[in-house]
Structure formats: structure tokens, C-alpha cells
Amino acid sequence: MVLHHIASLWLALASPGQLLENSEAQAKFAEARQAFIDEDFDAAAEAVEAAYLIEPEPMLLYPWAQAERSRGNCSAAVELYSRFLDTDPPDEVAEQARENRDRCQEQIDAEAAEEAIVEEDDELEEDDELEEEPDPAPVQPPQQDERPKAKAWYKDPVGGVLVGLGVVGVGTGAALLGVGASAATGASEQDMHSDYLGERDRATGLRNGGAVALSIGGALALGGVIRYVLVAKKSKADATAWRVGPQWSGRGVGVTVGRRF
Image (cartoon, rainbow, N blue to C red; front, side):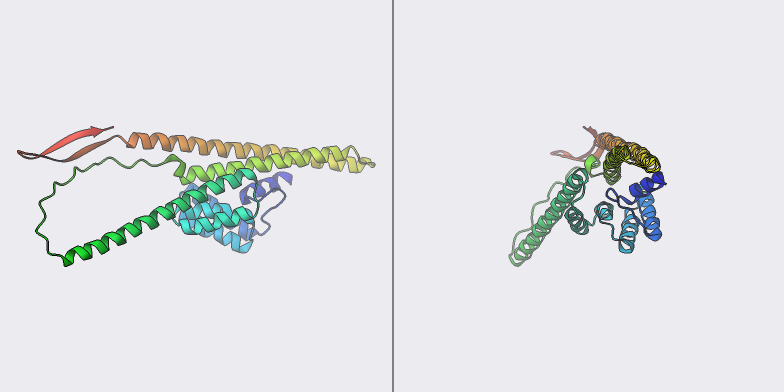
């Protein structure tokens, strides 16, 4: 029974001592977890939101924010991260949520700055059209660079989810081990033999559950780190690309093929 509670606690991302009690909410979160694995972040966001509406467990706000951020909805993600941080989560998860919220806010600010520049350029173009100017000289077309943009490893959504889940699992396991140790101490203080046996069994179950949660959390965190490493290596490899484009010179136009490093 204790192991069943530990698994439910880990799946629901609840804080120590809390569980998703509603079966429909648990089913929706199971759908969200599978959607994260499939990198279907639209479905993940909808499933976590549905679970939260059924049972508003504060720990659900973190994966919901992760899903919104992963599908490019940083405005919603920033709000959800802030609501999650307001619930006073464990320090390890709070630090990760705070970093992701700051990255989303930076992206929002950068997009706003780009829009301001575009609007300013449009206004300048409208002013230029009112003035008569000679036809501009031909401009040499830039060489086409086929090199793909490198993907920042720390922005990989799957790695972020795995590491976040791992941290929660490790925190839950550590908490259960602590509760188990307290229960073991309380068992020795029981006057009745039956009470002693009950407390001892409870302490053993809590310790076993804590060990399972630590193992699951550690494996998920390690998986996230491995995912980050693989994404970083792939981005580095993709940074080397062949470039084919026109080459202008005083004698005419040619085509060059080269490799960028």
C-alpha cells in the first residue's frame, strides 16, 4: 500500500504527504506525462490543465508551466511559474522554476523589442516614400548560409521535464526517509507490543517507499542530464554545414561551395 502511494505521489508531482485523490485527475496527468514523452506539448498542456481543474494540486502548476513554455506560450508560462513559486515549493524545484520563468521573460522582452524595431522601420519607410530619391544602386546579394542555427541545450523541453521530475522524486524520497526514521524512533516508545509492531511496519514501509522514490528521481534526473548532453552534441555537429551560394567579383558571378566551422 505504501509503494502504491509513493508511485501516485511521484506521478502527481505532489509535495510530501499529498496525493491526487481524484481518479480522473490522475488519468489526465498520466496522459500529460505520455504527451511529454511524445513531445506533444499542446496535448501535455491541455491534459495538465484538465487535471488541475479537477483537483487544483499546486504541484501541477510546474508541469503545466513547462508544457506552455515548451509550446512557445511564454506569457502563460511566466504566470504559471509565478503561481507555482507562490505555493512555497521545495528549494530545488523552486530554483528550476525561477530559472525557466526568467528565460521566458527574457524571450518575451526580446520579442517586444523586435516588434518595436519593426514598427520603427515601417514608420521610417513610410517617411522615405514621401521623399523623392534616385534609384538605389544594385546591392550584392549575400551568400546563402545553409548552416543550421545551433539549438541551446538548456532550452530542450524534454531534458527540462526529466530533470524537474527527477528533482521532485529525490525530494519526495528524502522526505519519506526522514518520516520513516521518525516513525522508527516512535516505535521504540510504544507501551503495547501490538502498537510497537504497527509503528515498526509503518517505518519500514516509509523507508522502502523513500528508497523507491529516490531511485526513480535519480534515474529521471540522470536521464535529463544525458538528454542535455545529447542535444548539446547534436547542436555542435549541426553547426558544421555546407554552404552553397553566389560569389560576386569584379569579373562576374560565380558559385562557391565551402564548409563552415
